[in-house]
Length: 184
Image (cartoon, rainbow, N blue to C red; front, side, top):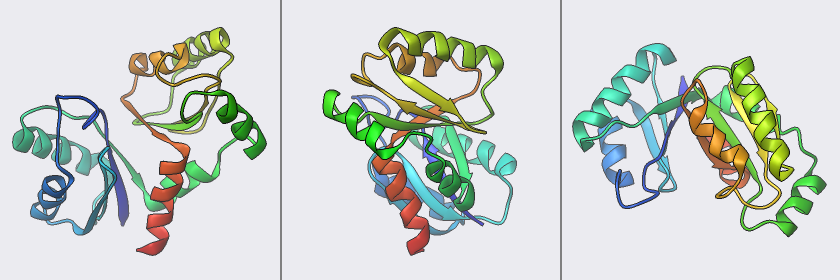
């Protein structure tokens, strides 16, 4: 089965640095097939014959052992990832309008390990109302549209408080990862 591992919080500051060549080598040493990385934010495409729940503990343990710090890993099959990207609820013109007024990218997908809880959704709705941001929950993802900037958004700040680990990718990066599955 083809998977993407999405590592949370690496290579965004001076700590938790992982060179992609080293990450690729680790996945190969774990005997996964067709390993490739994309961007520096921790996206690894690979083949495995096991289900997600058996892969996650092995990957998180191997990364911590090799690099000396814990990193949450979120997994999606190729089909799950493509479906998450294809289910963007915001029309292209709405994304374009937000991006024309924003500082940086406006559309993001947050990938969660488990579906958001009702408490999570209520907290996100309250935060989104502050800045006029929008979100739409999928099964294990959130589609996020920011009116100003991800960096100072009250909605974005709530992602660290979800009941499930989450990691975000901007819409263009997510689309490019989905396209990599088509190329494999």
